[in-house]
Image (cartoon, rainbow, N blue to C red):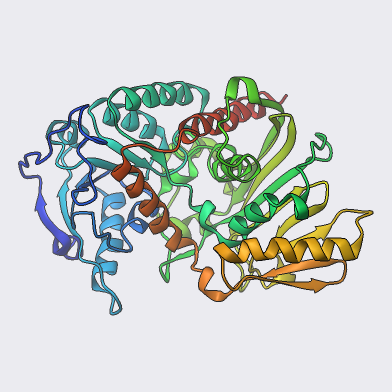
Length: 466
């Protein structure tokens, strides 16, 4: 039985519902226009599903239909929605209609009470959910990763083909495109007078490096995050090399080859990949999951001293359009005091390097550094930088640069630092624009396919130990 808090947000439970949408291939994006978006949340097991509803959207119906198996996952999801609905400042007004019978997926496909399926949960099932949803003429907004191995990558390619055939939009949630220092790194890289051109690099000294550090125990919307036990099973969540690295691979494509289509069969060449474990103690596992002990499906990963080994770390070395890149992800249990998830990024140009640092020296806040290449004339570079800055300021008023030794620090007004959680709303707004237009930019789909090829092929290489 669902607790009282969950019952409070339920408008209907396990009741017969009929679809109000007629979806045809002739409709713009399956009937989705600027004022009739109706969400279906399918099997929400990750807190990202709730973050999409941290704000309201003018063109989205406040009634959201949730189809999920009964249990902790859906209950935790509904608690977060209720917290947004009851917060003192700017509360949301979502109404969740819940269906939790075992045939939830079949029921959703039969009823189709909305036109956009939101997916953020157990990744073992996600690609199948995606394929069946687009086959049924439904748009899909999915959390990463949309594929966690080569087999699901092959299914994902079929899903994109089906989405095109059925005139629906399949899109993944790339929040890191909306982090301001990343956006500015991209902007400065498109100024040849400042950056020059992107170097080619070598496998040992890549032109592009992106590193991400994450933490199992963290706070979301001000409260400790409770993770489901399956999150620590790589057969259900996916290894780190196919999970968080999705963001990093996406940023390599988005920043270094803006609005260019990537053909994974021609433009991507993997040179090496490796993975390794993070070990959790039983006490740490209990703290983050609130589970009394390891479930049966995790016992295969429990080693000596009862430590749970999770393949959450990974590194990929590859070439994209002839440019050498390296992406890596590390998972620790908990961040140091005052810190959170961190990001490091370097792009090497012929005139300057663009580097994002987020360490202790930056008070764990991301900062963008512009470092002139060796041999660059200082005065000429400063003149070019100030000219380029004016172009950046036309898009981002208030951004400045400050000399620091031989480098320049990009200073950013606080209004641009809106936080990771706000980026989910920004992604949703972008997706809603695409739905209104009935199409996405031509480069988005091939680049999503290239991205998931890169991560899943890297996993295959890492598992083989090559």
